[in-house]
Length: 202
Image (tube, rainbow, N blue to C red; front, top):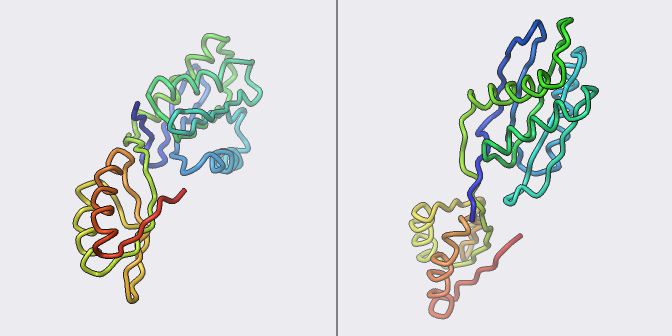
């Protein structure tokens, strides 16, 4: 399975091309519904700009994506931005390029290059991290197994999202899908002897 990357945090970069000012901006996405909220907020912050063109990609298979030229000639802004994100091997990412027109027309080829370079400039400033498929689980166990589980999870790359303590311990955990088999093997070994229960969550 291909492991894509995303940006760790929001970054921007400014470039000047033939008197037009371009501001490239990229941000990580937690879900695809967040994309247009972030893009809308960014565009609102630069409402005085000539154009706020954008592109976003989301999903482990990069199955969801959209882009917009925002008034630039068709195919000269949003699609080149999308291509720049794709070429960088990214997913779960949004990009906006803000342009302040400087009075010199760039032409079709010039616009394509400018919007591509704006995204690439922002990515050059960004820290890239892997997008790892995760599986969520709910585990209900005794305190002894809880300690063992807490020791095992870091080695598997898993995290405890929530925990509650009562007569037994209930965990909400997240683990990389690649490590799910090893985790379930451990959990299954405790089901019959210790009454541990667990379930996979969406």
